[in-house]
Structures are given as structure tokens and as C-alpha cells.
Image 1 (tube, rainbow, N blue to C red):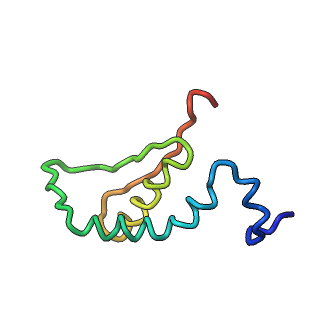
Image 2 (image 1 turned 45 degrees about the vertical axis):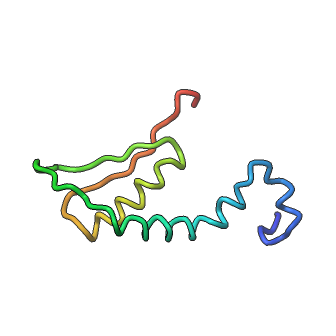
Length: 87
């Protein structure tokens, strides 16, 4: 088994995912700070729920949104991963 802190493992990462993972925390902080200046319009209808759909990792934003919504609203939010056409 390879250790993730072994520099040699980076040679196996052809797509650069280790770099993406290493900056994820900073990107989330930057996005959170940027969102502070956004004005969310009032929705003039009653929502029964929200579904955020994504393929694979693109549903991660929905996961974060659903987690935040649990403490910030009574409207249920669910993230669902769909299958791509190639699957």
C-alpha cells in the first residue's frame, strides 16, 4: 500500500488530483467569503424541497448546500448523484 505522504506517489497522479485536493480548503474559504456579499432574492413561492443533481464529484456542492440548509432552513435539501450517459 502506498502512503499518501510519500513524494513518490505524486508521479502516479497524472491528472493532478493531489494538487486539487491540497487547495480545496482554501477554495472553500474563498468561496464562503465571496458569498457574504451576495444578496439572495426572496422566493415568492413556498418550496416543498430542493434537489441538487450532479454526476459524481459535481454533486459535492449539493452535499455542502444540503448540510448548510439543515441548520439554516426548514426546507429539505437533498443532493443526488446521477449516472453519466457513459456509465
